[in-house]
Length: 275
Image 1 (cartoon, rainbow, N blue to C red):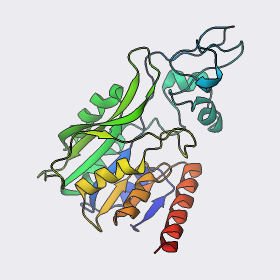
Image 2 (image 1 turned 60 degrees about the vertical axis):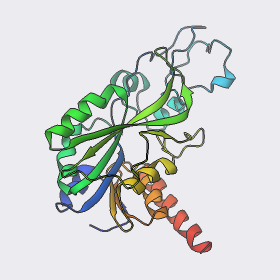
Image 3 (image 1 turned 90 degrees about the horizontal axis):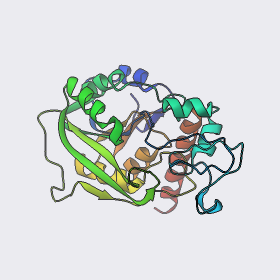
Image 4 (image 1 turned 30 degrees about the vertical axis):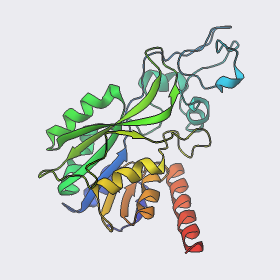
């Protein structure tokens, strides 16, 4: 496999071509179903929105009411209209099935065995997931040989609407491949504060580069190889470049693959410019 390259393909195909024990760390914002309590699709006149709203909340009345004929759906980050329409998905079906993207119905058990296989012994694996899918992910990971190491919490520094408490955090499941080794900075806490990206996202679930860098620094060394099976807009790649690590990634969406490629090229150009 070529280093510092994102493959525009299904991660299962990428993983199959990778040799055993070739990766020093895995960090990935994995796909999973997004059904959450409070999601509603609204068609009725003057009915207030649920917790998920495709509209800019600043442009609605205090109750968040919309006029007749509007379809209301989002993930609480005002992305429903932009991303669901862009991906040509049927909105009601997307909400019912928890499918924001065309390719997020891949099951954990379809890629976890190969992720475990390509990881070196004594290394760490970080998988970002929501509370609803956390149990299933951990169960499937332990089936293939991973050891639960810790549950990290990303404090996003902003809140999104939910009628069962406002959402202001996300989970990162930390796994290890025996024999488990210590993280580099053992004084690190498992609450990771990092400002969420608000507006102008390159990808609807884009994560802050600093969040990924924190994981990279703690679980790898310079020139190590980091794997991200679901690269999205390339955040893990950027974090690796900034911390002198190599990366291997895959992204099945041609649209986000092209965004990631352009982002990486721009980053490299800017870095050379200021050297």
